[in-house]
Image 1 (spheres, rainbow, N blue to C red):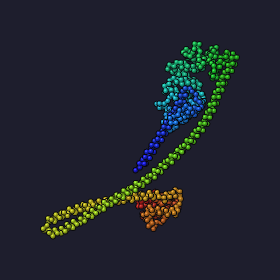
Image 2 (cartoon, rainbow, N blue to C red):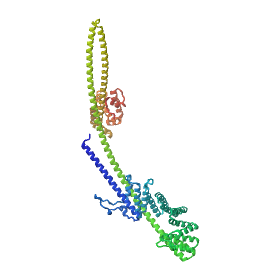
Image 3 (cartoon, rainbow, N blue to C red):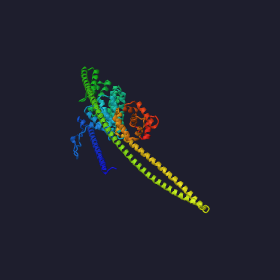
Image 4 (cartoon, rainbow, N blue to C red):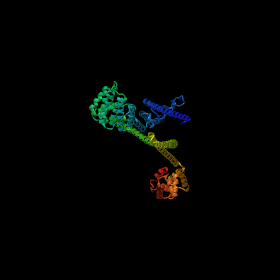
Length: 628
């Protein structure tokens, strides 16, 4: 029975454990809330086109400068690293209560930070990991953020001139934008795919996507965007010499596009169209019109890549007209624009290559450090778990043996009480039988006297004689029946007494066996077997004393036989501890064949049969010894 004090202690321990678990859950919920708030604020900053700074990687916008203290005195605005937020959502344990959308949004926010810091390689890897974390089969998948992630990836690949990867990302972005329901954005992406194929000189694919995007713009009533989408198609047709198709698109563009003013001028960002028109007139041989539209395409603050086709077109025009001064002028301008564009491109590629190398080296070192830390944590965790498991198993084994011994003692006491009860019943029934036998004997003597007396009076008392004989037969039958019943009861009681005595003997043998196996001498000898040590004279003396203590009858029978030597007695006792002949031979310093011969001598002396293999079984049956 558990005492009241122990029960109170158990209840208090359970309450403390529950409070600890509740506190841990509350802290984890609070931490997850702060991580989510940091990611949401970073996404909001990105939606509002607010550039990120280098501090954003380490301190989120939810910084300590804007925090307010909580009633409990904690600082709820503790600074959070966006990289820590991403690591938090990607942790295998935290995946149990966070969603794939959380990992997607956090990765997208961190990639946007690296994008603003011009760390293109890290941004690309971060966005790719964010896209891979999304669960596109879930009903609540955040297709908007997934579409934006692939769109940012395509822009990064476009800057690196990785057009094949850009096309793959654009296809994914278009697909998920359609799942989200943003048809306009999907059409815009189709136009960008056409531009990628154009740069890859796959003009058939470029024409297909240009035409498809233009048709979809008009289908969904985005006519102005459809007209804008026709400008790269005009350039493609002119380069391929399909001037009639180009003229048809140009007429429609000039007739319906709303950004033409009353003087038929376009805003600076749309004047690239005049460059296409100048190229059109150049192929028709109308060099004056080509010169006019090439010059009209010029605008302030143009990039070198935009100046390059204009100067090239003017150079071709003046080459055909043979104006040497103008040829020299525009050849020099074309070379300057072309060289500047190439220099800028080379500088960007060099910076990107250096950034790739530095990032790869830093990433490799970080991965190695993380792996070493993970292996150390795993090793410490496994070691602690093993220590706990070994301690628990040891405690359970000790409690099991104690409980087993206690139950065996209770069972022996119960069997002894049953034996006492059976003996008392047997004694009372024996007394009753003796009493009945004495009464029967007395009755028989009286009847015999009556019979003798009646015989003398036979002539006069025939009737009384017959009645007495009949009564004698009935009493004899009753006595025989009673005697048989009592004999059966006595036999059953004898059998029960023998059974109880056998059970008591078995239980006592089990207790003796357990005590023998747990004794210090047995454990010492097993340790010597394990360490391959030889027994000394003191060890042999302790072995003999242990045998007399636990198996006195066996030792008496062994000592009484003249054919059994002291060495044979030692072999017999060691058989009860270890069954391998080699181990016994090592302990006694003799050969294995010598031990086998001694086993045969013991079997022949005790059981009349030289059988060393069944010796242990015969000893267990006759003397209750253990079988190791």
